[in-house]
Amino acid sequence: MSDALIDSLAAAVAASPDDLPLRLHLAELLVAAGRTTEAIGHAAMLLSRHPADADAQRVMAAALQPASSPSAPPSPSAPSSPSPSPSAASYSDKSGAGAGGGAPGGVDWAALEGEFADVVPPRFAPAQPVADRAFDIERSAVTLADVGGMAEVKERLELSFLGPLRNPELRTLFGKSLRGGMLLYGPPGCGKTFLARAVAGEMGAAFVSLSITDVLAMWLGSSERNLHELFAAARGHAPCVVFLDEIDALGHKRSQLSSSALRTLVNQLLTELDGVDGSNEGVFVLAATNAPWDVDPALRRPGRLDRTLLVLPPDQAARAAILEYHLRERPVAGIDLARLAQATDHFSGADLAHVCETAAEHAMRDAVATGEVRMITQEDMLAAVREVRPSTDAWFATARNVALFGNSGGEYDELAAYLKKRKLL
Image (tube, rainbow, N blue to C red; front, side, top):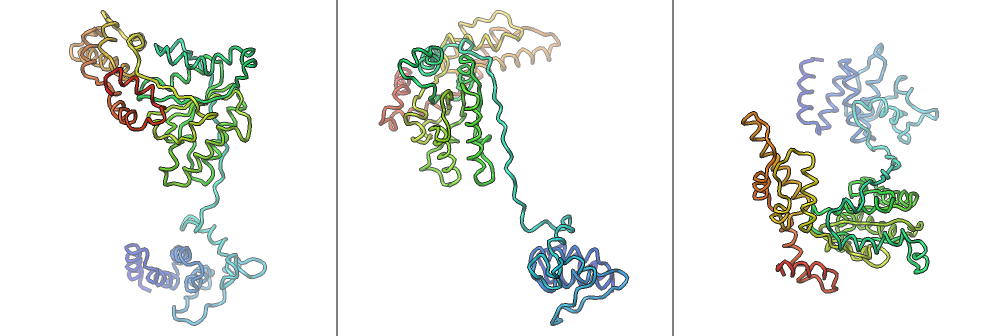
């Protein structure tokens, strides 16, 4: 058999890998030419597509014959398949029937699949075990004293969580349970995550943070299992603060979800908040979102995330404290924090951090250009304030529509009052 003809056919097969009759003809020619290793690869590819194909099985059996007694396979039009060679028969089980359920020739195709796994992948992927999750249980060193401003927010947290924990006698007298949930919402970058850590540090409690990326898994039921294991870990470390970041992604309105898997995940979250499988005594759930209007209403009923707290941009005193914090390890001179705080109205904490970063870039740029290091000055800070725009404006534009048209139950009264104060409503 001409090697040039075989090579030409091999090139044609490479160009049209789905042309199975052409691949079968090439495998037959390879067997006839004694190039059995190549023939086995093509036969294995054919069998991966059609495991019961008699012609492909015949070619594979012929390719597996000992090299000392080569035998060309019969033509494709032959009415019957030859008896298996001794080499091929060695793959059959003791009963003489192949693993494929009595396949022609008695070939154990499961064994062949394992032997030629590097040539063709298995038809079915093996089941993937779900690994046990180990969630990081932290001890927060941050307390509410580290949170600048937010006097009203701190007062609400004191009444909801911290006061009952510090006064067990009063808690018992008034029948206040050590469980509960609170939804923190507001524009991005205003310290909702930092506030949750501060609550955990103030309580001396364990802290575990969870986002949707920590829960979602590709295997059916694994996402629900991950969520259950998180709450089981929190119950085992009570008192514990569980922080659910971006709760609108984890607990989106089920009426708006097209995926049954995500709806099931919301159902699992509702079950865990109810503590059906175990007591949630000592487990405090703080959830944060920038879009509370997208959170499933069932999550906000009493006994779950039953209290809602608006976390607004920092006030003037808080802005001064945040600016001082971000400038404390930088070379500064002549900084007027009070003036800067007054000029950064409506800036979020993240915006203020960006102002300090931008001012440092201005000073560093001059140092690179002149070769002389200089301090960050008030002029650098004011230039940065003019350059950085508050990121909260876009959020309040959306929130205004919610306060106007989506506040029938009064759940956004606090937001509406703030917008009226800013003359945005």
